[in-house]
Image (cartoon, rainbow, N blue to C red; front, side, top):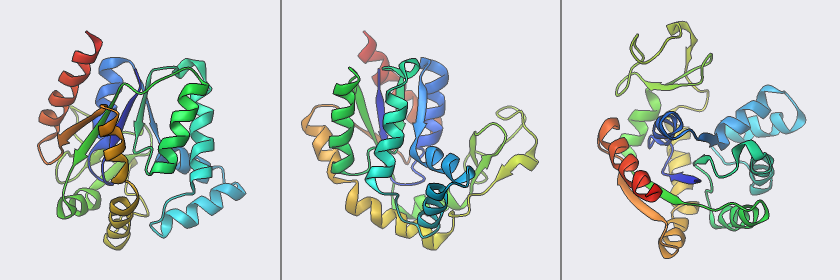
Length: 216
């Protein structure tokens, strides 16, 4: 199956995606992670992407779609993907639909995590990412500890774009460009609305229950 997780920055898509990877043997594709890896290469494209991210803007559809196609063309990931925050607008929706047909795949379900702006700001300001294993934690809601994280605390880092001004810009961009795709997937009868304000375990139990029903 292929699953899409939709929601504003900080809605918990990464955390829920990590849980799904472990329980359903899937691969999580985060456009943010794909972009950061390109930045780490320090290529011309990576420098361009870094400038875009630091302004709280989104990379162009062309850049994102090319990165996504590289993943979809890999047979190891065929119908085993979780899309974390992609597609972000109707143009990307259409591109993904074409790529799915091109590589003989399909979308099984789209989860929309609904979270208000104030909660988003607090979640992102407290977000920490392990530079060693890639897991995401939150110093307020889901702190790293010996039970959920084997790496040393020194590997926990905050993203350079995780500041309030950038967060609010990204949230407004989300409202403008991303929300229209919810109606599209609702019309396709693929959309599931999830209360993203609940605790992590409750949210995941709901998502897991829906996915399990798809497999029967």
